[in-house]
Length: 156
Image (spheres, one colour):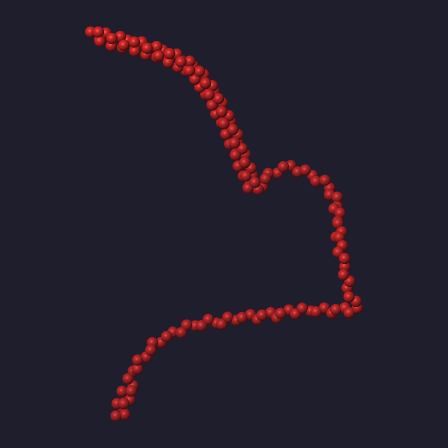
């Protein structure tokens, strides 16, 4: 019976699957702090207290005479930003001059047109008066002719 109990006990037990352990990262070592620097206390002189100094003007240094600078020939500008800005300014000034010329031309055209309009107005005013007079005369003749026709029809 002892063998039967052993056989029953020797039944394989359900084992948990083996979990692989990951390696831990080594602990980060902290660097030791530098010890605080202690200020050295200067030994005070016990002889006599220092007297306060009056504020004095700083001495003005004279500049040494410089030799005359030699004139150099004008070199090409190295900065492209300033030359680009100058080019834009020149282009804008050229545009402004062209626009001013166009304005002058338009003003001259307006003046000449107004002169023509004045001359045509004077002519048409004279013509208008003559035409109105002619139409008035024609109306009188037409009315008189209609009146005659009306009288002749009444007589009949």
